[in-house]
Length: 173
Image (cartoon, rainbow, N blue to C red; front, side, top):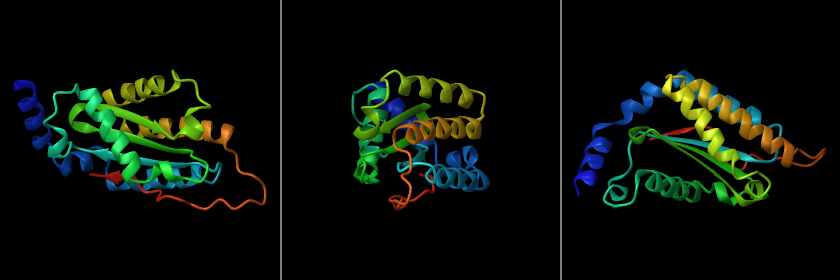
């Protein structure tokens, strides 16, 4: 019970200013441009979602923090319709600032082509950059690595339409 109360206070203590501190408006714009440029090279879709703290409904559970963050990322993957791309090749990069948690959720079209160890290794590299307060470096490098996978497995086909199925702008919450 005490751990749940601590978690609730930690998540209620952070606010939208925390996301603004980590992701300034100019960085938000650069990330949007990088997502758009990435999606010009492959048929996948990439979303970035950064939230300061979890909604209250997620905080009452006894589950470990990592499991809660993973479930939240999966919920957002669904809510944002990242799973609903034509080639099942959407990717969500999720940051939970209150817990310093990072989750990457890839749709089955990409996930079945990637070694399972790739995703935790990517999260570790991102975490290393974030620990040094290099959020732009961590997110940019992660986007570059995800883009390279999408280019490798879902390259653009000549004379085939490549509609932008999802917004490119990162979401701060």
